[in-house]
Length: 158
Image 1 (cartoon, rainbow, N blue to C red):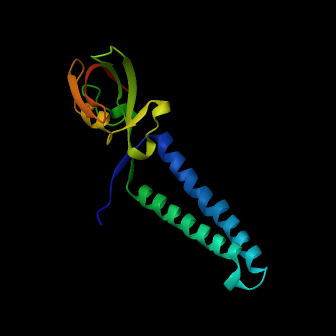
Image 2: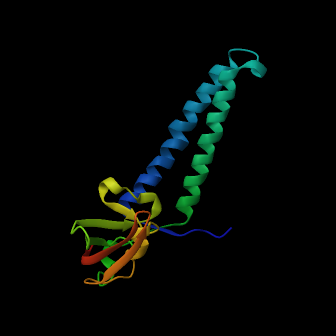
Image 3: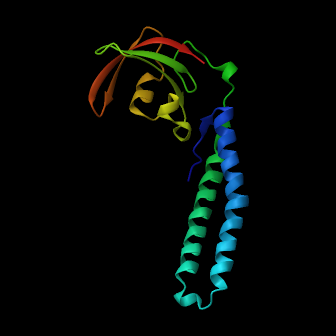
C-alpha cells in the first residue's frame, strides 16, 4: 500500500498529534480500567461489560492506528512559501457566485482539517478541486450535487 501524503497547517498537525497522545495515554488507561472492573465481576463467558470493554479497546486501537498512519504521511506546509498567484492548498480564496452574487472566503486544506464552519474546505471537495490552479479573475465552473455553479476568483491570499 502506498503512503498517502497529506499537507497540514501547524495548527492541524498539532491537533492530530494531541488527539493521538490523548488516546494513547488516557484512552488506553480508561479501557484498561474498564476491562479490569469487568473481569472482577466473574465469569467472562457471560459478561456483557467485559465484551463491551474489549470492543471499545478494539475501536480505540483502530483509531490510534489510523492516526499514526495519517501522521506518517503528514507534511507541514510553510505558509510563508505559498504562491498566491494561483489557488493551492492553504490558499485563502475569496470567490463570488456569479448567479446569486454571494461572496465567500474559504481556505483550502487537507480532508482531515476541513471544517466548513471555520471556512476550511477540502482540496478533495468539488469546490476545492474546481478552484485548484485558478488565478485571480478566473472563472471556475464547478459541478456540485446541486448542479453546475460558476464562481469568479476575487482574491487569493494566505
